[in-house]
Length: 271
Image (cartoon, rainbow, N blue to C red; front, side, top):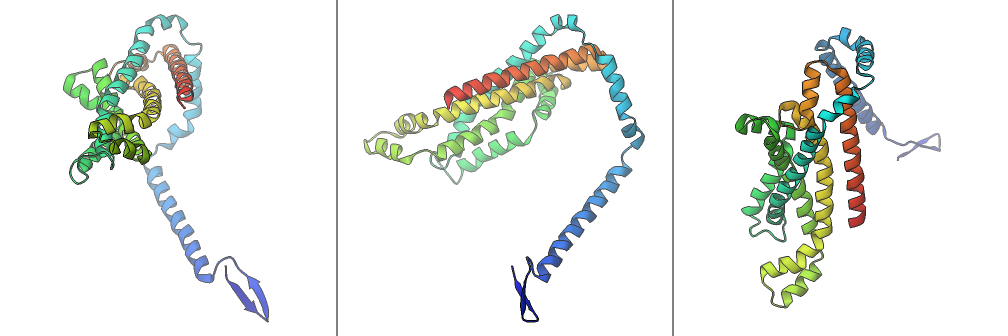
């Protein structure tokens, strides 16, 4: 915040001339990038469909209302499959994420030079690929169905759970660990009595939170053939059965709301 002198009077300015020029140049560069990107988007966009979108949306809304309520009798099994995909996938992921987290944490890994980088690679690789992509790959390998959806959810969840868990392991109170170590306890005893009790609340919270996320993700896996209510949604969309589509969306919304409520209650009880 320089103070400039003019005719024996001090004039306060927030920035110097050089700082102002840099700031304006940054704004100019940002606007130029935006304009360039907008031109690229405009060239590949059919604006007729964009301007006609409100009419199409209103037409679909008219066709989709009221929902076909009698179709709900056929959604019991698909929504049950969706819940099973999310639950089983979360359980499998947690079973695999726990050892990965202990191998990735600096204070529990057997080798920070060799084993920890491998564990971190597993965490990054499983988190970086969306569950839909995992489902597409698994459907090509093991075929369509609920099993492919369960494995896709499990693989996608390993990195998420392991990352949060190994961060919780690194943040434990080392005083308790040192006290147990001073008694002559073995490495496994230190882990069982000094580390695990401290991370159990974090583990429970991570498990419930990830299950809540997996409920949402499993509802759309059926769009690629991985079972669940998404399969019914895809079939209804293919035949333009809009009243069925609206009912399926309502069921998905209710299922997600219930899972959110259960997740919030469980996390509140744990915390």
